[in-house]
Length: 225
Ligand code: ADP
Ligand code: C5P
Ligand code: MG
Image (cartoon, helix red, strand yellow):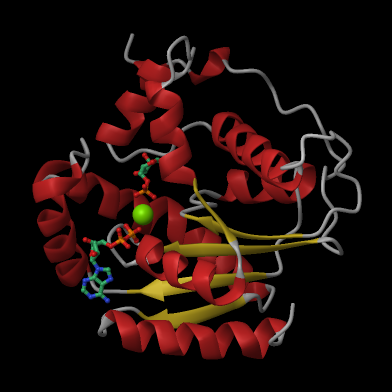
C-alpha cells in the first residue's frame, strides 16, 4: 500500500484547548503558492522584527530524515507527490518547535512566555487551520504572497538546480500547483472571511516585496508588537 493511503493509522486529534494564548504569542501564517517567495520574505522579517521562523515544509523534511521516525516514508511519498501530509503530523511538529523555542532556557514552564512566530507554508488545508487554532494557538494575521504559476514555475526550476529537493522538478511542481489551487486556496478564502489576510503581490523584485510586507505587518500589528 502506498504511504499516502495509510493515514487511517495515524492517531486521532486529542486536544481542544490551545497550548498557547494569543495574548502571549503572536502567530502570523505565511501562505502563497510553491515558489512565491515565502521563505525568502520570512528571512527578512526575522531580521526586521525578531520573529522565530518555522517552515512546515522544513520541519517535515527534517522529520523525514530523522532516524527512527515512524513517518519518514509517508512524508517522503506525500512531498514527492505534492500532497498535504496528514495534519496530525505537521501540527505536532509545529507545536513541538514552538514549545521548544519558548522554553529555550530549558526550565519547562512556558506559561506566560512571550513569542512571535512566522509559520511558513501552513495551514495548507482547512483541517490543519482548524486543528492548529484549536489545539496550539490562534493566529493574528495571514500574509498571502500572490504570484502567477508561470513565475513560480520559473523560480522553482532554478531553485531545483541546487536545492536537492525531490519536488523541485516539472512533474512534482505540476502536482503542487494543483494541490495549491484545490486545497490551499480555500484556506486563504477562509481567513479572508475573518479579515485576517493581507495579500501581497509577490511577482515583483524581492526588495519591493519586502518593503510592502513591512508596511502591511506594521499596519496590522503596529511597530512594537
Ligand atoms: P517558497 O518558500 O514560497 O517556496 P522561496 O522563498 O524558496 O519560495 O523562493 C523560491 C525561489 O525563488 C528561490 O530560489 C528564491 O531565491 C527565488 N525568489 C524568491 N523571491 C523572489 C522574487 N521576488 N523574485 C525572483 N525570485 C525570487
Ligand atoms: O512549503 P514547502 O514547499 O517546503 O512544502 C513542501 C511540501 O511539504 C508540500 O508540497 C507538502 O507535500 C508538504 N507540506 C504539507 N503541509 C504543510 C506544508 C508542507 O503537507 N502545511
Ligand atoms: Mg519555502
